[in-house]
Image (tube, rainbow, N blue to C red):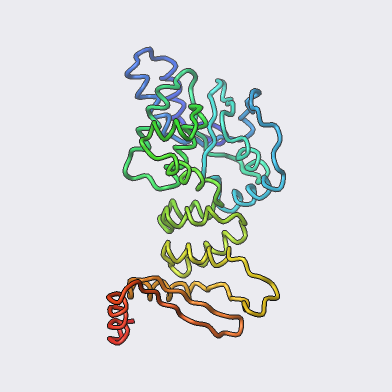
Length: 301
């Protein structure tokens, strides 16, 4: 059977059974199964919601997303409503759908909704979030689905899932990361801490450069944050008293992180463009000073 441009047989069966049953318990279970299932659908079978308030999209941003999708695929599925006759209506993800079409993607991953099951959908999504095996991107996608499909604010969502509003916001921000970085989080190559730090970088090119340095250097979250900080440091051009500092390489940041861990205190490494520099070791008491001295004289580094 040719499965191209249609939902898999299992999902079609689920949709059919939901429409047939009037049993609340059975219907709830079917909705739960459908909520966690992803179908591959041709973009040509999906019509845009006529009530979508957003009508204008930044062309440059769409092209950037299309390029990312072409390389890494669509990480965050769109959500559609089954309209019958192998047709679907978009609920959320118009930007992703447009970019996928621009990228020439023949099938897009999609969650399929059925009408009038808002409460059951919300319960199923909240239950899904509480699973222990979800990675940070999967949690972020579930949070975004709850907000998009159940019309929840960050505040209302934080109440539903029992998390601080800032925690919810930090997760959702991950979905703005390039697909390549999101994939690394899903595969366990990067932690939530790494991803959160990278999400704070506005420039995508710089974001990807730092990401590659972090992966290649196996940098810790702290070292990643320090690298980002070094790029964000404002340098005063033409200042004789403040020679231009080189951006710390992954190797230098790794060394700095290692020294800091061994000594148990904050360490700063400054390097000038000429190659000269200094290492500053901080201490807050005579006891800390004596401990640091002992470590250094015992050749533990």
